[in-house]
Amino acid sequence: MSTYDADVQRRTLIKLVIFAVALAFAPIATYFLSIRRFFPGNATYAAISAVVVANCVLVGYVTVAFREEQAELNEKKAGKSGGPGKKLE
Image 1 (cartoon, rainbow, N blue to C red):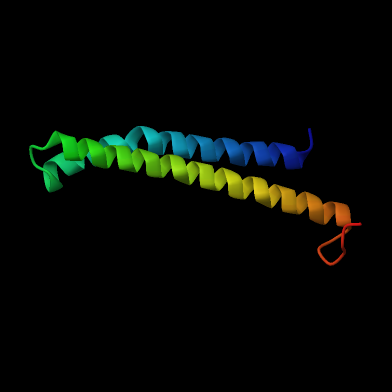
Image 2: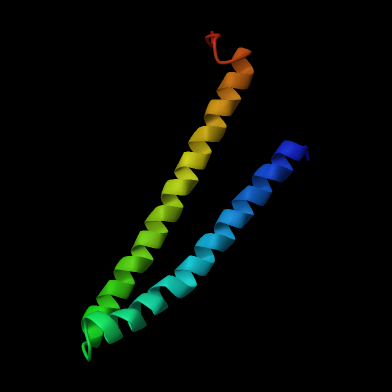
């Protein structure tokens, strides 16, 4: 395994851990914050806001994953063509 592959795997693992922690804590924190500050005594609205936050974290993870994949594809294309100024044939 090259150092490039190891670096990519390390960055990917770090992103996964960050999003896993966010997915574990952000909805719970949102629920309790919402029920205490914004919707006192109304658990339904607090739960809905927690679900919205959980979905935002998931959408963020998917977005980051697609951008990372696209960046890797662009790097591979640039490497095959001999640099950014040359065209693929």
